[in-house]
Image (cartoon, rainbow, N blue to C red; front, side):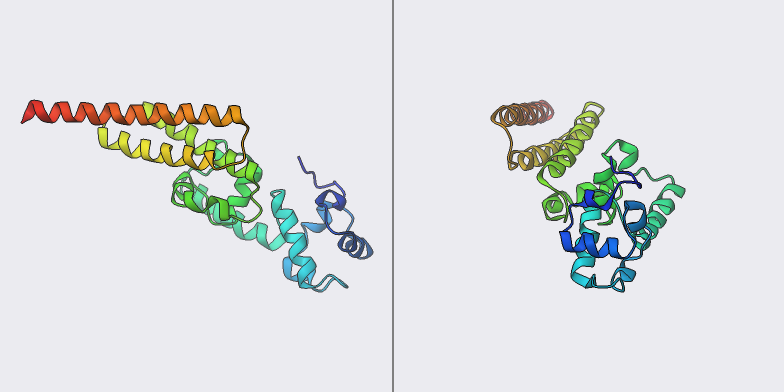
Length: 206
């Protein structure tokens, strides 16, 4: 867990960037996150390239510069005032939440709508992508157990199948892949069972 009083070295920035920040009195994370992105350009010998490097490194750790924090926090406050459940409220890792919030992905519905684009999100490592996919899968599994309508179940299974397939594309251990394949088989068997039951019911009423 990154703390405000951690030294800026924890960001693993280039040595030259670290030195230029220190030369301007920026030694700790708390010093850095209180600076606006545009103001970084005016720090001696930082420039746009190093400013972007700093911003990206902060994002990887779920941190933001002063103006960015204000922007997404205002959106979060607005959503909460309307009693909208955010990803953080559902238990997703807070660092991953911040990365998603910066891409305007605040709710579970937002996440589902961007499921095909998760791997394209900047600063989201493979491990982070897998955690997010697993997060979606676990919620949809729980939801499935409470469903009664066949159509809703089939839609739910379609999402589960998609998520597990995306998980299988990750660089995983053989054991984990085997477990995912078992999950996929169980989901498809459940779908087959629903479809067969539906056919039987149709014959009865024909």
